[in-house]
Image (cartoon, rainbow, N blue to C red; front, side, top):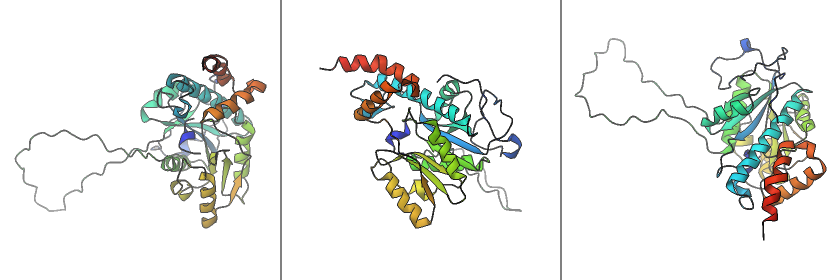
Amino acid sequence: MTAQNEESAQISSGGLPSPHATSLPGNSPLLRPSIPPQEEQPSRRALLVMAKQPIAGNAKTRLVPPLTSAAAATLYHCFLQDILATVRAAARDVPFTPVIAYTPAAAQDFFRRLAPDFWLISQQSPARATAPDPPAAGAPPAPNPRPAPAAPQPEPPVQQPERLGDRLQFVLSAALDHGFRQVAAINSDSPTLPPRLLRSAFQSLDDPRIDAVFGPCADGGYYLIGVENPPGRLVTDVQMSTSTVLRDTLAIADEEGTRIDLLPEWYDVDSARDLDRLTAELASHPERAPATVRFLATAWTSMSSSQP
């Protein structure tokens, strides 16, 4: 999972599992779905989709050109619809709680409308303001100084980690603190990712000999990370946005004695070459990403034919 591929169905009526409400802390940053789950059996697994709001100029920017900023944002919106449908399909076979880890923080309403059956968590971790220490017992009251001129009040402090590794550490740790025993996170740039790979990730974590699981990407990153404990250095000490992300991660795992399992390789869509590969795949298997197929059949085709 690289900084580029962090960007990234029809809405289901529910049926996805969720953990027991009584066993979870009340101050968790996870927000419950607006559509109550139909499944009564709680899940101790969670799968987080790392997603951003598809805003023109801020989504799939490496596809501009050949796409326009607006078309790139529309394409990414299609990616989101398809990957959320994939998550729903996988959850019907291997129960887990679906979560969208979104950015920016103001995008909550957008993702609530997009996927009312998913839990939500912001990738930004709110900082807790520190209250002043109370006066010592028996201390005289502080003098009342002359009022100072009113000064603009700063905004409440907010910790907004810019690095993808920091955000992964926050959302994965928050989900584990929420009561889940296994947590995986995936990118939203792989609209044709097979559901079987998501199922395989949790099956790997069921193996007591495995501490963490990764899904390698063709570009040297990874499309999935799955853990049973906060990943720590596996995400925070790795320079993202390079072709050696997974290799560097595995080196840290080896240093720390973390036992890793690797899923089959897949690819994400960050460049025009990736888009060509996606187009070729969907020409033979349109059922893998229906929303993306509709985009490719209209906007992308017309733009390609207009190129000199």
